Length: 74
Image 1: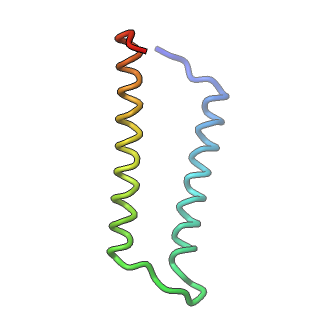
Image 2 (image 1 turned 180 degrees about the vertical axis):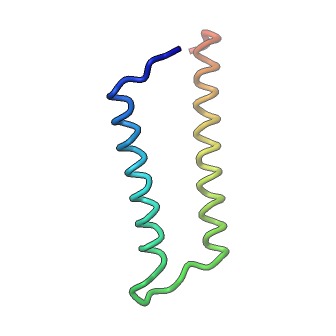
Image 3 (image 1 turned 30 degrees about the vertical axis):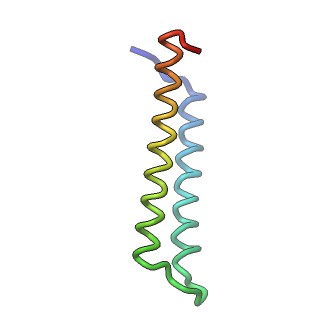
């Protein structure tokens, strides 16, 4: 079993905290409490699809990179 170090725990804690802050900022900033316009349902759908496609593309490219490295094709 791999032992997790204190540095790893601190790093994960900081990253999770930054993620939470980004999500809070997104909802407060785009929720338009200052009288701005609301983001439509189509806008939310487009944003979610864009995030999912970007993450899938990045994950796929990383998987291909690791596959290529293990097969010695670098």
